[in-house]
Image 1 (cartoon, rainbow, N blue to C red):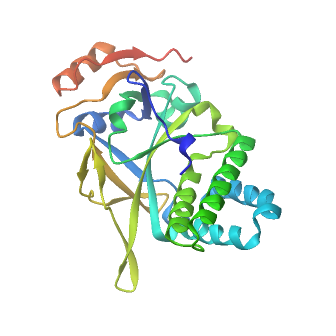
Image 2: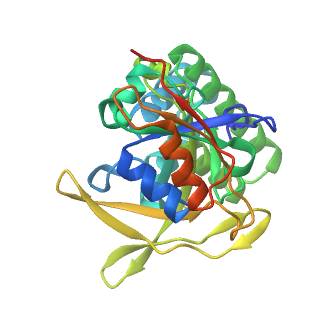
Length: 284
């Protein structure tokens, strides 16, 4: 829905996934990337920062669009967490940022894996370029809300299927807004939506699948791990197109990682992750 947030890479763009040494080993050997619950299972009703942007944009537009219209969008945005759960894998446009090493790569002892962006976005994901400027976020949200308003007028149906779909997508795309304090990350976020389905008196998660390298693909097995004592959802996606591709093009060794680059080259070539450029971080 927020078209300008969609990441559309050139054929040569590389995006980097910062990770620990163990995660680096797992990704390279399994040829799979993990998409994890973007928020947390005990707080899925809230879209955090993005929701606060929606509230501000709606407040600004209240005199123009009216309370009833905005309340109906809010009902869908606020309850979107009951319809589905976002899982995501996070990348950066910059593969050698000290704050990234500290936060996501075992305090610099890990790696940054450089993927060919044009290939990795062929997974069943929605690639979003994160926006950090709060004023721009509000302006963009206002533009989308106005677009929904105009579309609603043209359909002639009051709060019908098209309105629900647009509002629902808008609610999930609010995850492309992030606190300005994180602007150094230059994040590209690959998101995928899992569905909530009734199960006995409760709910369960299912993956409906999506388009994988141009073809329809069935859903993945949904798995959990414990994070801060909470069951956290994840799925894993094979990024090789069933062994036909390998989007890993570059590996940057963390500033506190003492491995010899030749050792990484031998490791990767042996497991058939071939012709990868190996670099050492320049961060102090």
